[in-house]
Amino acid sequence: MTLFHILLLAIVQGAAELLPVSSSAHVIMVEKLLGLDPTRPEMTLLLVMLHTGTMFAVIVFYWKAWRESFFRSGRESLDFLLRLAAATALTGALGLCLKYVVEKVFLQGTPHAEIEMIFGNLTLISASLAVVGGLIIYSGLRTQRSKSAGRALDLPGACWMGAIQGLCLPFRGFSRSGSTISVGLLLGLSRKQVEAFSFAMAVVITPPIIGREVLRVLRAEQAALAAGTNVFGLFTPSLAGMVLAFGTGLLALRWLDAWLERGKWQLFGTYCICAAMVAFVLSWSGL
Image (cartoon, rainbow, N blue to C red; front, side, top):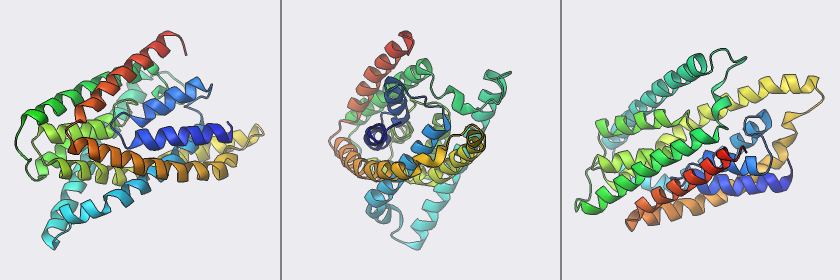
């Protein structure tokens, strides 16, 4: 993998990670078009670095919105943290259950079965993109017809958003932000609070995911050293990718916020449907 590959993937990751179009699906399709294997440890390491860049972009962009929406008083701060904890707990519980089912049932008999083995399945990615695209379109049209400004985020709403986030984790293509924001809109919650809370959940779950992927790379590194390769040789050039993903992510967040404000949310769903068709064609072609 060259520096050009890393920078190209950083742009794709940074733009798509923070838009409701599934960054993982786009990155995987680009990797396959470049002849790269998205399930290899070195690709995992690169994605860890790129995710770190976009996580910092989220913190920088939403810090003011979090402070205005959830931290105006001690009581509001406590309520927000409780809702965030409940949503994250549901995400973790459902995500771990799905991970167990995939590895023990669907990958039964596969040596060293890991959920990452299904990440490169373009047919599954295509189906996931189509489902989330339909959800985004439906929620966008429903919101357009509603004249209500939306009610404040409550505990049940936070739990629903956390639950749908857990369902997204194992399936590349099922956009995390697309599904969580759509569910919040369908529940009649405030658009600004739904958007801010969705990315607050992302900041909470990103470090554990990064930690898991780093451990996976460390295990692979031991085997790679025996074969005369160095997985961590990509660490330094990946730092450049992380910085680029940060900058691209900030631009993507501005775009997302503007389209939500103007009632163009469902257009992201249309894009996901088109991307699903592309993924299906690539899968059918045997890529």
